[in-house]
Image (cartoon, rainbow, N blue to C red):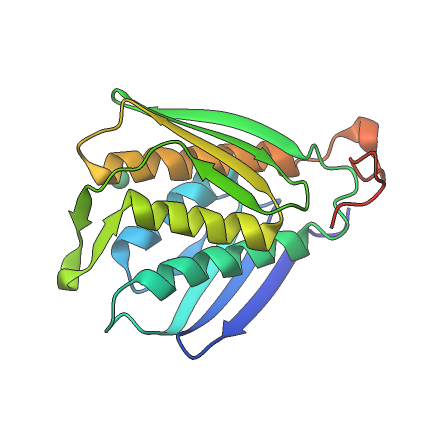
Length: 205
Ligand SMILES: [Mn+2]
């Protein structure tokens, strides 16, 4: 099989990010340096549980403002990298559904690599996690990350959090784990579909 890998470099006036993705990786040899330890932890969880090898480097970011652009652009770059690595998507399962519990909190992610970028998170919550250097993370940031990722990958994402924790870290972590698990399923090759794009349209954009 052709290696399903991609290398993306994206430079804007706000951020400069490089990413390398291997969909058929091991998940335990990623190298993630976003400059935000919290984001490193979350992307590592996604990589580990999705068995993806990811190299992610933020060369420049405007975190002197806040993490808004960095959070969004990491989602864009990772989505683009997965999209490129999937080529024409022939043979993939396309759909994935996974859940991850953390204590009472449960995150469920349903993904369809349909070519249509869309994301829905079931709850709004204004709790904020204080990171170092006066930065913050919240479910609003998580939703924004997921939207960026879904749009640049061309996937429909349905994300449900049940028994939302008071700890933002727990909520976000459960979602990143479930996202890795669901995307792993959706990107797997189904041998019964060898060479066939899994759409009745015959293509997935
Ligand atoms: Mn954690």
